[in-house]
Structures are given as structure tokens and as C-alpha cells.
Amino acid sequence: MSANKFLIVILFLVGLLISACAGPADSAGEDLGARKIRVVATTGMISDIVENVGGERVEVTGLMGPGIDPHVYKATAGDVQAMEQADVIFYNGLHLEAAMAGVLERMQDRRTVVAVTDGIDRGLLIAPEQFEGAYDPHVWFDVTLWMQAVQTVRDTLSEMDPGGADLYHKNAEAYLEELNQLHAYVQEQAGRVPAEKRVIITAHDAFNYFGRAYGFEVRGLQGISTATEASTADVQQLANFIVERGIPAIFIESSVSERNVEAVQAAARAQGFDVKIGGELFSDAMGNPGTPEGTYIGMVRHNIDTVVDALLQSQVD
Image 1 (cartoon, rainbow, N blue to C red):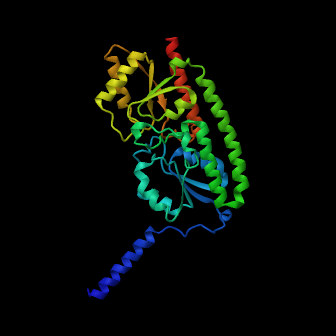
Image 2 (tube, helix red, strand yellow):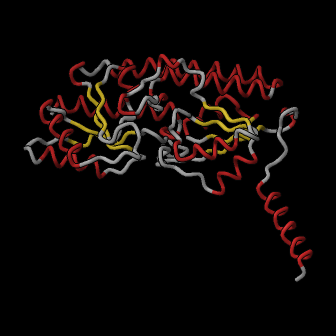
Image 3 (cartoon, one colour):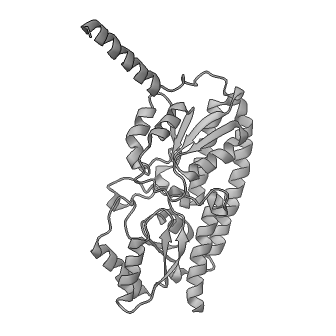
């Protein structure tokens, strides 16, 4: 093959690659009222917001389903394609989707990419010392903070699609009222447990906002991110705490392996103390679609009911 023909083949192949990687033209300036807005959301909790606020005017693709751990999730080729085709990408931020950071950063050059936590006053966020100056990303467990994420989604969709702004505001108002009722429900349920008994122990520190908002002391084995491995010393230290405080129940998480919590349970039993597994909590992912736990509201209600039932049952026993 001659040098010229070889060059032509190379240029042709490069052109095909560019075409394959390129998404649709930027939707800026397009009348989005003529079709559904294509939305990609990283977590189920964010998908739930978009579906409630956007209603029939949006088409939502969620990247992370039930049981998926967002701390270590890496975008697949299908995920990247979905993001390339999207009009807007909503993600949590605060380093929750740490393994996707590079992909999200690259998408910002050609798509509208919004962290739903950007509108939350940083003074309301928790910044654990062990998290190297960054914030705890699990804001959805304080319902009042998650309401601010709803407002961010509402405002973003309204700006992109002014013709649908009235609908987005109406839907958001109705959903925010449901979240107000959810917040009151969690407060009421938490109040059933004596203050000194309000202790939640799980695989990782996903419930610090929940604890602060609703009066629970929270201990997690792995820290803020599940990417952090728990050591034998961590297991023993947490078991000692359980025995010393007489903690009756600890909890597994749907998106984190059970083995670490079971190791803590075994370490406590080795000291002659029987701590029970109080049930499964949904932390970084919601439940299966079509179930109550497959919605944000159902997920939060399940968690508080499971915790309260386990801690109150221990008093009966």
C-alpha cells in the first residue's frame, strides 16, 4: 500500500472514531418543549428527584441501580454513551462518585452537568477530620438538606426548558410537601426510642447526617467511603464499644458486603455479648424498582422503621 493510500485509510478510521464518540449537537438554544428532556442521574435517589419534578417532560436514565456502591462505581461504555446523548447530567457531588470524577469532568465541556448538592450551604455540611477536609456526601439522610437538592433540579430544568417551568415548580412544590411530611415522620419515629438508646452501627459512616438531624449516635466500621478497608483493629474496637455500651442491634447495608458487620458481631460474641443483626438498611442505593424502598421516601421510611423496631424490640427482650 502506498504512503498516500495508507494516510487516507488512517484519516478515514480516525473520522469513524470521532463520529462514534461524538454525541448529538448541544441542546443549548433548542426548544426542549418539543420533546422529552434526556436526563442521566448517577444514583437512584437523584433519579427519584428528577422523575418527581420532571414528570412526563423528562426521560431519565439512572446509572446505579439497587445494591450499587457509588463510592467505587466506574462508568461503563454504556454509561458514557448515555451521558453523551443526555441534555443534562445530575450527580451527587462531594466526591460520592469518586471513581467517575474524570468522566464527569470531561462531560462538563459538552453537556450540562450539575451536582445536586451545589446549592446546599457549606455551613450545613459535615466535614469529618478523617475525610481530609472534604465533606460527607451522604446528605440525603437529612431530609431537609435533600429538599435543597430538589430545588436545584427544579431550577436547572426550568432554566433549560422555560416552557415547562410552571410544571416543574408545581411538581416540586408537591414533592417538597411530601418530604416535609417524611421529615416529620422520621422525627416522630425517632422520638419513640429513648435518647440513650439511639445508636446506629453500620458497615460505613453513611448515616452521620441522619444521626445529626434525628438524634442518633452513629458508628460506622469503614468510615465515610467504602473504598476504605476496615482492619482487624477497627473490628475489635467497634466490638469493644458495643460490649461496653450494651448495644443490642447493629445493621447491614444493601450496597455493602455483610462480612464486616458479621465480623463485628462475632468479635462481640467472643466477649460473651450477643448483639443481633437488626435488619438491612438502604444507604448508598435504594431498593428494587416497584417496591416501596425503590423510592427515596420509601427508602427513608424503611430505614427509620427498621432501626426503631430493632432498638425497641431489644427493650422488650
